[in-house]
Image 1 (spheres, helix red, strand yellow):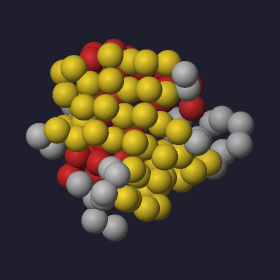
Image 2 (cartoon, one colour):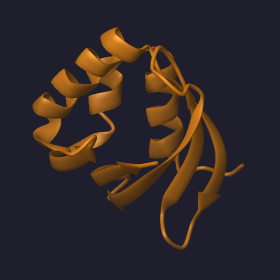
Image 3 (cartoon, rainbow, N blue to C red):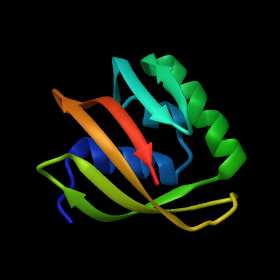
Image 4 (cartoon, rainbow, N blue to C red):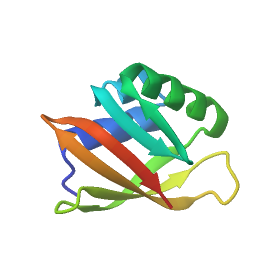
Length: 105
């Protein structure tokens, strides 16, 4: 699968539980929507993913990438009920960084 470089980096950071590298994939003003909550800015995103990594220890296995709509479908496995689950990562990418990410089931 031919993923944009930033999505490949995001996946690698997630699978290494590296919250600093994960947050570095986002713009300074990025927004993440997940589990009914909004996380604004790179630092808040770093704090959110660090907490999620400690709680869920989730890894991502990309299954399909829709280039037209910038949606990544990935099997996500971890320490949570229903694992593994396929999640959709709706991305807006600007200048090779993620400006917004919405995660849906």
